[in-house]
Structures are given as C-alpha cells and as structure tokens.
Length: 303
Image (tube, rainbow, N blue to C red; front, side, top):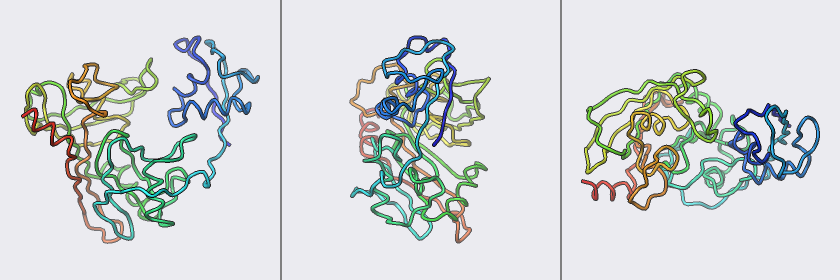
C-alpha cells in the first residue's frame, strides 16, 4: 500500500474531494478515486468522507492506494505497428488515441495490453506490473517511435542513456503561425502549472531543466512544419515550450487556445526518429517512424 498526504491549498477551496485528488494524482482515474473513497481509503483529518465532500483550505487529506495486482492487467489482441524487433527490444510506431500503459482504475486497451499478448513473458519488469517493458512514454495523441524493452538488462542500459540525455529523439509537428527563425533553442524549466494542476508550464521556481531545439522544415499557409530535438524529456515538453514562444502545436487541446479549423484528434506531433547505443552490440542504432497519413494530408492542404 502507498499512502499520500496533502494539505489543501487555497486555490482548491470548495472543490469536490474526488476531483481534487484526480487533479493531483494524474495516473489515477476519478472513478478509481471514488472507489477508494467508498472503501474508506480516503480520510480528511483522519475521518472518512463522501465523494461529494468539498475540501477546505488547510484540510489534511490522506489517500491509501493499494499495490497493483498483476492479474488486473491482461494481454489483449491488438494490431501493433512494429518497426524493429530483436531479443533485447522492439520499436513500436504508436498510433493516435493509444495510452501507453495502464493506470489505477484503467487496465485495458493500452499499448501494454497489446505488448503483453505479442511478447508473452518477454518484457522487462523494472517498472512493475503496470508498465512492463516501458522505458519512456509519449502522450496519448502523439504518434511515433517508442522503445519497449524485453529484459531488465536492456531496460537498465537504455534507461541510463535516457538519464544522460544521450538518446537521439527527433519529433516533427505543425505549429500555429510562421516561425521567422530557421532554427533555435528553447531553454526554460518545466513544472506543474501553479493553478491549472492538470497542465505543465514554464516554472522558474519549481520547474526542472528542459531544453528543446527546433528547426523549420517548411513554412505553410499560416502554419510552420518543424522538427524538434529533445535534449531533456519533461512531460509535455515540446507542447509547453512551443506554446511559450507563441507557436503552440496545431490541435493541442491544452496549450493551444485557438480553435482549429480542422477536425483533429489532439496535437499534430509525431515522434519520428529515435537513436541509441544497442545494449548487446554496443553500436549506435537509429530508427524512423513514417509520418502518419493525417499529418501528410494536412501538409498537402497547407502547402
């Protein structure tokens, strides 16, 4: 069991406790939190409450989350777009609207469920039963290349490269407006938004070091097709950084406040290239995920 304790800030005054906890515990669904409230795993000042209870500034809220049970996550038949596979890892080209791994209260339909069916017992278990094989993530509506590790040695070997920022990670995407510079670098720390707890933001006080390099690939009609190379890997990094220079990603439902004239499913962002030292051969390998059809179509329309 894991116990989390929070002191309610003024900004959350009179927010329902189930909503309050779902904002702070982003990997837990609101329905899962409501279930824990019913099971008296959520207490305010040591007393049980209902899901409708509205938190007050200064409330001490504790929530006990039970350890995940492996039986809750089952293999599922799923069409996986596999770019490369060997005994150490595979590179998957993830589709839009696919969540990478299960979270408490949401155990089906994720990429991990499909990987468990494809790989059987050959997935690393470094990140536990909820994230077998997963060494890094990309957002639900971001497409592209994702590394999945088949054993603990390859997982640790590749994770160390991620930690040292030595992995090549290049994305492509369409942003609002015309970027005047041919290339540039955004060096600004990213952390949780001080008010909108579901969002990330440039946070000079509590943010973590974050660097994104961008390069213009093509200027379009009112938009720019660009390449982004990550030096660090913070949550929503490209999305936050580009929005901070007034060029948010087209279709981004969180950081782009301009209504899109296209029918899109989330941000126009694709993880195109990933490169790293192979855990067995110790040679540099690089893989590319083809640009998805929807993005190709948009580029044709806007050219």
